[in-house]
Image (spheres, rainbow, N blue to C red):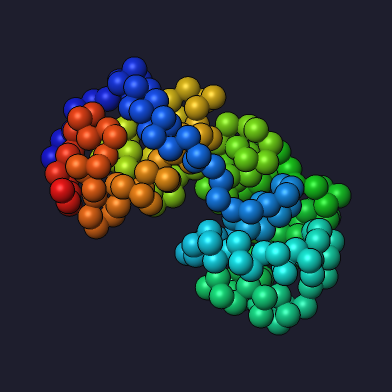
Length: 217
């Protein structure tokens, strides 16, 4: 079904409604600094934020900074992150990422997209999480929730996260990107679900061009 073209004005009214519905929307990954957020975001791939938050306190106590993580024994690190899934690959990326931070950035997390995505284990989604939540630089995070919802709302038509991100960045003003992602993620978890969307409880049902797709009253 071809959806109507959504204007910026229409999208912003919808976003205002969603922000009013989810005033508590925020980054759900517990962290105290950019390094901790970077580690938590890498671990969150194919894993819930809740599970990551259970793992990271012990992880950060053992490896408080990139220098400590860079010197980690792979087997020990794998054991600590095992419950997040794909633990061998995540441990490998964390060690390599930490080593790169020590080698190139004196142990500091960079503030630029190009530098972030060049780090092992870091893609655009992770980079946008870091930019928006650690450095207050606008970042449009596109995860499965965001991608699904913006396609339903007609804000984007692309299928890949990178292209959806580009469409959203053209549609929404930069100052709204970071919080828009938080709000859309909350909406996706609580209402506009993948298999069964609770359309009758949706605060923007009357603004959705695709009402009824997998809906439940």
